[in-house]
Image (tube, rainbow, N blue to C red; front, side, top):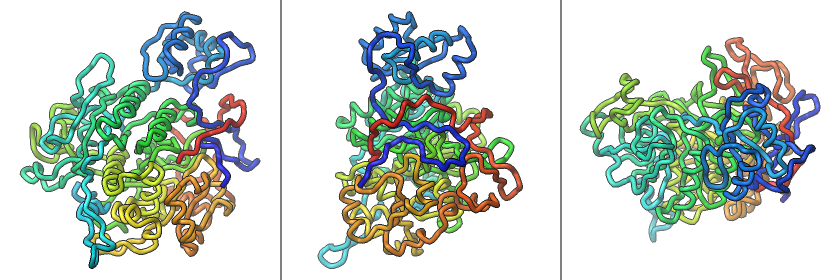
Length: 596
């Protein structure tokens, strides 16, 4: 089937008054001659365009790709200081004028800011099907149709975060630790975020029984955790720190059987994913066989309570990442009352207009491990839920908490079927999820994660999703929906050309080779899949589709007001409005890489 560009912008109708760039994922950041070229101008991310326009002598941190030899040549040619080096590039400190000179250098394809990156269980274990998945299912006579019990044993998960503190619930779970926080080699968790994330993935239930009933262990307590510290004691790091951390995980994947990278962090999207350094790094990790799970971000609502669309953060905007939104379970194990939290970032993504997140998982008021003495423990003592010292527990909310739910689920799937590719993992998670009509694809992707249904898919193939799953004694129907999007899916679904119904034969072949599925299609399992009968706008936007009187396709610039009569804000982040469709100096369409 035809292959689409992996990070290209959508083909929007002419009536959309937007200028969008069509770009493709490229791992090459430096090319061409070393001479200045008056006609050449490298792509600049949005914040660098602002820096250049200020005509200031203040130095901004700029990421430049290249080998050590190439970096040295560029630095010498422009007499610019190298702030730090990382795998595949370096960070320069440049003034506005120096930035202009760099952009005109024919050896440089694109420049991005070294942006600051920030961090973004009892009910969850049952409601997601984790408990049932760990228990497995006995087979009939001769062991047929059985599903083996799994707990993540032997699967390595790299937690790229603020570190992991010593905790009773993580005894012998952390098999390696490394720090990429400049000037601070400690791998302890001074902020408290990484420890909480690690507990959601792999914490043991036993220690908590003495101090609180609110924590019953992580999703995959048999996992081997790899502690990759990239955030400091205030929960902040640089993009280049995260790149170094991911590169380390790639390089050491065989040493610790690292199969999953958890990224409960991100920064605002300031350029297309094709030139975003974090997205480029995610693509490299996935091409190395790792499953990358990333938070969607917490930009679903503005500080004054207005709904916000298009707030997905980087690297959650990467088509290679499994991007996770946050659910509120309302304290029940039932799934029919779950909703996407107000703060969970909704798609589409900035610049590329891609549908994200890919699915959603519990992320609201999650009780997990507390790093006693950390920033969060000290400054948010009201979130403490029990215990003390190395056996303390606290409650946090955010897509940061939903992301490790999915990382733990991935570990369970990979233990049961070690040969799964990253594309098969995503296909199983999405096909097994329960579609959420009110949220639509831009709020919850394929829907609410159902680990048990996904585990059955990895054991028996996609067709198992056609039958209802008995989860906690209640029959649950999977959406049977999956997609890879680089920016065209929403328009293709609206027109109907992007809906693909998979027959039994199609499903068999797609499971064996997911690349047979076309990027930009919404793949629906079963020729009678009910989602095919939902109108395009409602399918993509959920209840948001009802916030405009027009029956036409919802586009950027469409005037909408939510149920309270408040105007919808598009892509506001940190108080600064993102201008959608800003020219990105694209030179045309390049050959891209399929995100599967």
